[in-house]
Image (cartoon, rainbow, N blue to C red):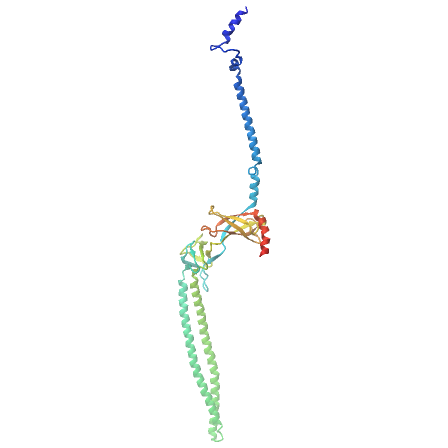
Length: 396
């Protein structure tokens, strides 16, 4: 009864294949239960996950302790607080504004440009910058010059006539005086001549006295009248000469020459309903600044600082100047002047702004006046500037 099951066991549980020596029970049970391979796989996954977690923790700890990474936000915020950005406009330290000439003694609202130097051209002192139509002034000058010469001749002619009349009147007055002396001598002979002759001599004396008194009185009147007439002509002559000189001066004002060495910069003005630079043939109003001659060797930036940022500014602070039109250009600068009095702001009357002058060190062909610029002032250097300032003042 017990032998049959013992013989059936190998037939049912064994599979075809080579017999394995000894007891290989674990090997036979591996397909059913998963075996040690799956256990090692699970252990490997757990170890890998643990390693990743440890790596992440170490990385976070290292990043938090790093001075360049962990302090990046505070450092950048402090750095931003140490840099103050201001907006302004470039300008030349040495420049001269050129205005449309204002004529003397004439009411001319506009002038026509017939010659103009292009913008950006380098000029020297005395070079011609612009010329306006001056035909009317030249014609006026020539007319006044001819009138002046005519009046000069009239004055000379009247003076000559007066000299001749004076000489004639002086001769007549001298002759009347001689006749008076002669009549006085004849009267003294009254005892030696007849009574009729004595009376005739007396009448001649009275007549000579009357003639001499009349000539002497009219002599002064004639001189005063002649001098008055000549004086009137002289006044007309001088007035015409003054008008002639005004016309000549106006004609010279129509040609504008450069006062300094520099570069020509044309301003934008209001003409024909739009803003633009002047051109040859344009009519511009008298007194309008249409041009500048600047020396680009020394430039500066004029910026406005509000009342909140102004207390942090000091003379001598370093800065960087960037041009909005040319972002690739950067110039070193320095705060040179601080306005002592505030101005009204553009957006509110309650906000005050101060004018600040920042000098630009260096030069470039693109660096011209009236360019918008951004100025980054280094506020971190204000303490050093405050320390050096008393020493420099004491040394001076």
